[in-house]
Image 1 (cartoon, helix red, strand yellow):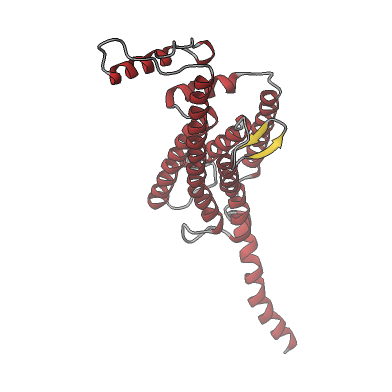
Image 2 (image 1 turned 30 degrees about the vertical axis):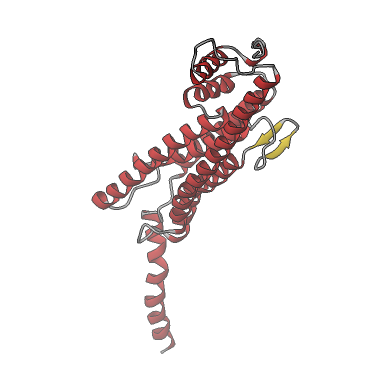
Length: 278
């Protein structure tokens, strides 16, 4: 009797134990193969070290590449360089990530689940877009606002990080962290039944909220541009640039337009003193 019970128990328990083991041996829960994880981790670490090293060289004024790029973006857009360049990069990165997201959804609808995180070409667009968002926030913080602003944070003497740049960096970092965490999630719990897994929500929410960081950065840039233009006007006034008197027989408004045209041609430091109107 006891041998019969033991045989029945073994017949019930052994399949329950052996099935998950065999399943795990034949088909993993969905995590990336180890031979894919090691190169990806090394590449990510190398990119992070390179970005930190470049940032340190920039802050020590050993390279002016970022300063020149920000200057070009400022001349084209009229916004401060620490706003124009990161905002442009963030916009490109968001469009890239969004394209990869829609392509990924369409691929899953057509072909079902992936064999791994690097077996789907759309994942590279998502990863590149999220990395671009992180880079845009990092560049905004790295460039800094120059002078202290009401919303900036002082990191070092003469280094003030804009609030919008910090928000983009944090949101992009959270979104990018969802990519490796997604592999851990699949290893522990298998494939998701729907799109709305916790790591997917982390990536989508982080990328979406980074748009608010760009909005804040643009608002800071507009405020800084107005303050810069106001200071330039005050500087010209302090240099003695006053409005010339109209010429004999000339309408006052035409004389005012002539004065503005002359002021625009001359820098504030070299502007001559206009003769006082008699």
